[in-house]
Length: 564
Image 1 (tube, helix red, strand yellow):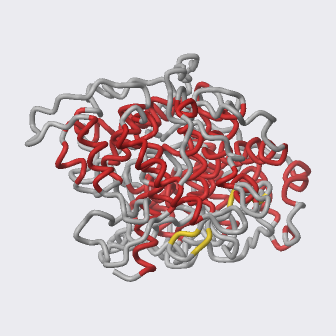
Image 2 (spheres, one colour):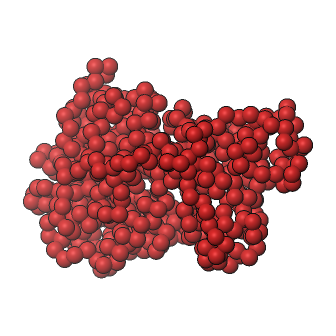
Image 3 (tube, helix red, strand yellow):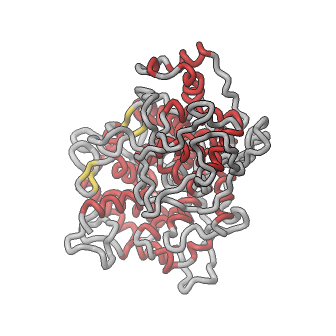
């Protein structure tokens, strides 16, 4: 396996989830005693701004490593007070539906799937031992299956189990019943000669010159933080901290597989806060720069965080990890329980009410519109990993709303025909496809005839003329906005917008004059409701829209309409 592939795998596993003596007092209660002064104002401003960005971007969190558990964890543990109880209630309903669709089996081999979900549910005050009738802790009682995934398995099993001091579950199907001590020992066994840890350390896949990776070392320390009463753990902790201090660069940050990145510094920040070590500890200040200083160099106001300085725009995976890192900083500064010590977590969804629960739809929706159930939990495609629209694609694919190609790809950057969009929107609204023979260029024998007929009958799509539809024509961005707005109206959303209201919204884009007048109210609605992002620089109304962009628009619309 080459370095690039190793790095990609390391980053992915970190998301599915993300020689000085240490004073014993530092490990007493998970608070970073000695931090003293308030966190730098820039870090606090970044936290609040990123919270706004995430709350707006991840409007309907799903079960997943991006656009799901890490966003929920960060928002819940950050103290950000703009999140409504309905947000968490909708997420929990989505989790229940997902677990039910899986019959409680989240994955046959990747047991970090259970750990990640346990951590998120615990952060919002929900009990993972009874989710749609399933105990999500039980799989972690199987030692051999949990460690199959490598060091990530025991690391995240401990973090999940210890997040609220859950009893070790009994797994009667396990060949080897796990204990906490077994998971601790497994982590210690994988320590490298340099004191740190790596993804492959202690395994047959490890190279002859395997060296510590800051991400994995940081996560190992997070898992070991609560076991400092053991002398062997304390010794390994000292050695790992010394290793991390050596790995820290002159800018206060860390590199993984040759690339300085934000996720690596986040994992070390969280490790120190879990251990109760001040972030201005002299071992982790280089040239006067702390890890917090370094993390903020990846921050882009209004758009989250970059993965790397030479990155192309913000990255949702990096943003979610940076955000929960900022939450850990804030909690340490305020003397609160650390990020993963959740004995203080309240039921954040308990105050939710009203008739607009997730999956039920809004009042006033067309009676024929129905939420689509999850039928393919965990559905994904090989070419959308870490793609900005991955959560949207996976959410729709798991419900049979959108599909990929026979070769296992989704082709997110490809364009979409008008016929394909008609099929997707009919699927998204749960309508029954039925051909109507309205358009002369839509042969009744074609696969798309029932979808175009139904979409036209419900007023979601219109033809290019009274008699034609142009099914094979590429759909433009302004056409997609109109069709999505029509679908939103069918879902009970208020899409009414005057010409002046629409102009006020879309005139911020330099090319809005290129849009057709008939499309402007729909464009204004889509930007107002964040179905299209106002962070875009241009509308590009006449440009053929991409498959990934269509998925994002429908995902956001369905989320707002309470149909996910």
